[in-house]
Length: 536
Image 1 (cartoon, helix red, strand yellow):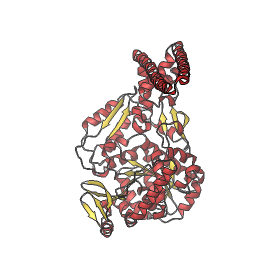
Image 2 (cartoon, one colour):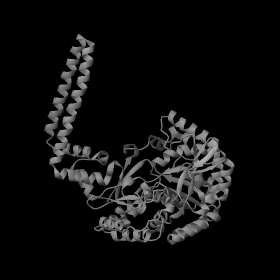
Image 3 (cartoon, one colour):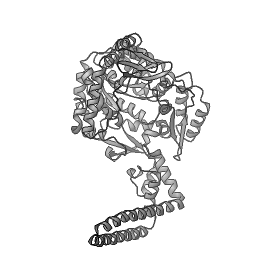
Image 4 (cartoon, one colour):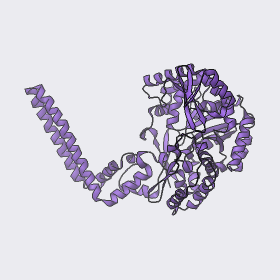
């Protein structure tokens, strides 16, 4: 595959803080002092090598889980390596999305593998590790995924479940989903590697598995051979090792509140919006039981979650005795990852990088917070999309708009240019005449000029409206135009979001097979200022 790069500033919806992070200097105070990009990774790795971690206990849990999900031998070997002093990990993680979720889940894992290779080549033995967010309870987000076929038709697949409680992914079983698998088979029936994808998914999801375990089993089948180690966030050993930091977060609730409120104000003063909303009664913990996962709030000196209530002492005692009943918030999770695992860096996306500016404020409580590096960001094109772009004289960036706007752009290239050249000329002439009338009115009475200026804005609006209507009508008459616009939009910007945030990675693997992974593994792991566009 060939590739070229887009600057992240050309991508719609990128958080302002993320864009500044890529430049670093202007937001240095919001991030770990060790973050200076890939040139400083060696220095950071050397520092982390000298720290102590509960290797034996965490590696026992990793061994059990990775064997249980059928991970590859090379991944199990990496678990053994991680038990050795001085061996580090590059960590990433994601919600347990249906059939692997959107493509970005795989891009995170691939980035972690690439960075682990880089560190190992530089003399710092490192393994890639994926933190399966099995404690996440946003079922609406993880229950659905989207595949795309050769004609860029989108297949939305949705897991059926009647359970209303906010159960985490580890407590939600996949169950019988015959219709779902049938629709999946339909979406892959013409793909060269569709049979392989169906086999992976059947092995991972057809059985008495939870959403998180099925997700882990799938990752093991696709990326386990590259050494990717998987960790279950809800593993009792993980929660037991985390309990020390749960207690710390509760005992220092006031300090946590002070630091996060201060950081939110600092971010706003610098012109940024905090990524994670924080209110005065929030804590860094959730309570988990058979009814689901609920946030623990601090209200008038007592902590509450649903119908449960504790004093500080009572809550600390319960955490100590029953650590499996608690899980960290999005701001505490990175701190715990770095505390119980010998991590060098964490790989995250634009939103995560933005909220790490708030995570860094917790250094005042925990003494250390992780260093984060951007994941790969990718758009996959196919030969047909490239032809359509060329025929209509479009750039990839022209596709980042509503479908109707894309159709208008294509119309402009297809219609007789003389029509719109003449329209634009008359439009400019009309504006000049209105400017002259405005000048005359001002000489007579300023109040008349104000009224005329208001009318001028209405005229401009109506002329622009008519122009757009002309483009839409032209597009409606051209079926080929609409077909090409729809193809490009579905592939690159489906539903008004980036391809990697909507379309399942396996629908691309079904078309390109191992060659796709080979191409992704050829991308530089430190290429963080660009969004990669890959073309077969």
